[in-house]
Image (cartoon, rainbow, N blue to C red; front, side, top):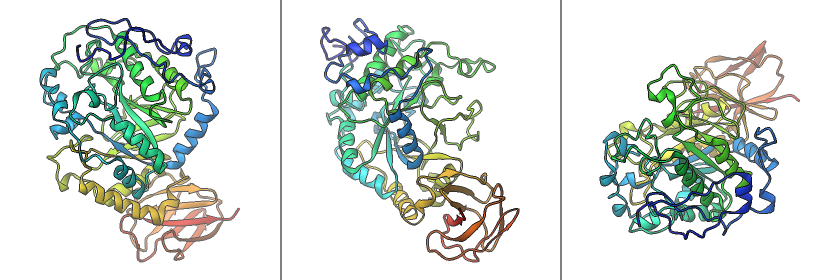
Length: 487
């Protein structure tokens, strides 16, 4: 068998409900493509068969999805995990592209991937100690390697590594035990699959033939998503897509092209409908760097706060009406990079500042770690996460369940609010500084105090509220002032 032949027989039959919904099309086998998907073990329950596209094909989220969105906005803080066979080389998750490693060489990495120190209980425990409420982990990155026991490919951690275990299933079980929600990062693009053609903006170096049937590739991608959402991994909080931009006209040298247009049809509506048919509550986000598309449930921003464009990713990223999330790294790369040193790592103050500013911009903060090929999270990262968790113990009320504003972010800090309480984050304020809080005119203050210790803080109303920062700020990372308002 080739590495892309399916491990299930041709007689495998798709769930009738998915065929009728048009969610998956049967892909006839060829020597270099999957033989099809069998979802018969985990057909969607009758309560999950509601078609989430209305008669005019406009996505209408279910009640369970709307509740999940509200939970997501309240959770505020999550862990991103980029982990795959690229960690063997220890030079980041884009190493195949950056170093133009052909498939014939890259395919030798799985045999060297043996994460015997992987401890999902310890990982989830760290998430909780950091004050995080959910995990987003790579199920498949751009290299096409599956970190679970896929039935439509043997290019997987179970079939191709000496470790031979389904790390996603192990993590899903531990998340259920410790009450942490689990999202899967899943790459649209695939540098390896024989039907991913056109090769896109990033796949020209792989040594793959310049041919293929893109619809067959999308059938394969949908089949793998159906495996992840079909029941074996329990309730999945959502799918975090990446790689749509690989086929974007703007990335093909057409700089003036409509940023929402691609040279192929990604069939997003069909894929999104599949996900919502299997698990209506699952939240879909797509890191495409443009305005949200119909069928999506949250919007993410890569290494930038919503509305900013310090990285170049956000030039076309119009902010929509969905829940927001920003993601960032502790170091430079997302995947493990053993060449990074302490000077490359963000400080605890910087990380808490990102968390607070994300909340002040009405967004979640998804903070990344890249474990080693042995399954170890770097001790420098653990130390920072635990210090963030200690800060959250004292100041978590200013993050969890809050929304941004009403004061827009300022050079010295930001504001969140919840109920009748405003939380002012004095990130870069000076001791004793007098600070005007814009957009607070008409608020009547009952009392103001430091959130961590209850010490009173002077505040007055002169149009907008005027806050007098204490002469001593007890937290060098972020001192938070709670302003309790009159009803």
